[in-house]
Image (cartoon, rainbow, N blue to C red; front, side, top):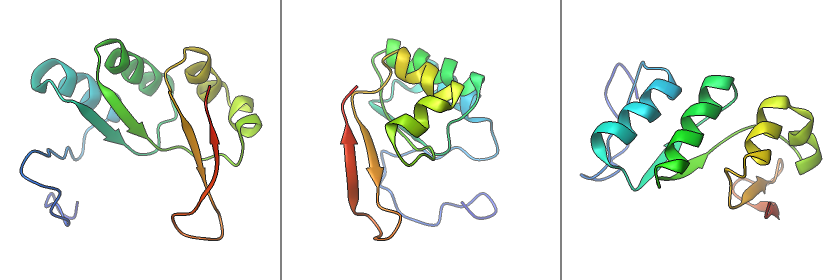
Length: 109
């Protein structure tokens, strides 16, 4: 988004939220739009954990990003550890730091 205008055409069946907390946006989408998938970047606080859990428990698939180099590294972060312990993820994919878009490792919790 730039000044409230999407910069990429993601298709007619895609809604983009801007200038709203992720946790509020996720809950709002689940309640009002019946999404099949929610995509959000940089999850990382307690509100995000609750919102992602709410979405998963409501049957909504999700793609979420976070920073970590390994599963051990993620488990050191209390927020990510909580999400992994809640079994909110079917798969955790680690991308290469050196090659754009290259998968380095896949973890199946």
